[in-house]
Image (cartoon, rainbow, N blue to C red; front, side):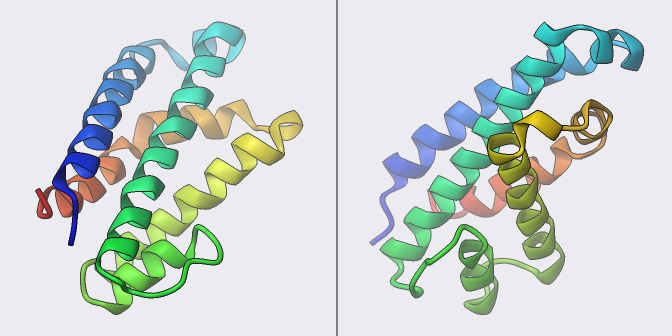
Length: 137
């Protein structure tokens, strides 16, 4: 059985993170790239956002008994296979997971331009996943 409180709490955190990211979004690209507080904050809050999405997805997979998760990319795959997620959103989420892995594991080589691009162009993808998860509340 899906626990709405688990989903609700994490969606609330994502909302909090998105507010912070929206505030960072307002800075011009050059200012963003030159200021470690801005790009560092963006990196961290993007990471936390993706972590929370994965956490919600993992809870859904477990609570709905959808299958075994060996890696984070199994979460969108299983939700897609069981009809909870469309193909495009599955692929988008898998790219998010890859981006999160870069932020966490390849932190020495993070391309700030890519971080700015994700910040500027891809927050709507987070909202799309949030709408899917809200259906379980």
